[in-house]
Structures are given as structure tokens and as C-alpha cells.
Amino acid sequence: MKFSKEVHAGDTLYSALEIVSLNPMGDIGEVTTNVTVHNQDGELVLSDQHSYLLRTA
Image (cartoon, rainbow, N blue to C red; front, side, top):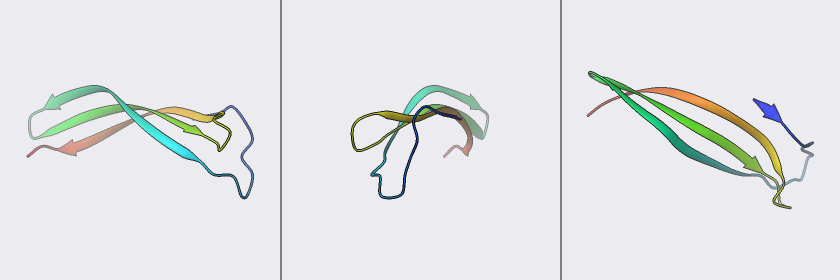
């Protein structure tokens, strides 16, 4: 996780997830996302990449 700007009490934050890969593995799958958070001024305040294991239907 990388903070690129300070975040203060009272700021309004907007998050977005972008799916960058899907990896099926039998009855589970791995989803990798790029995560960004911007403040009320449109400035990028946080970025990261997350991976999740999910059960498939």
C-alpha cells in the first residue's frame, strides 16, 4: 500500500477497483485488482494491488 498524499479528518475519499487478472483454479479462483483512492480534489492519495481467493459457482 502506498500513500501518495496526506488524508485528514473531514476529507471525502473515493475508491475504485480495477480487475487486472482472473485465474480459475478448480472450485476457487484468484482475482487481482488495482486499487486507487482519490480525495475530494481528485488527487490520488492511495494506491495498491490486492489479490482475493473466491469460491466459484
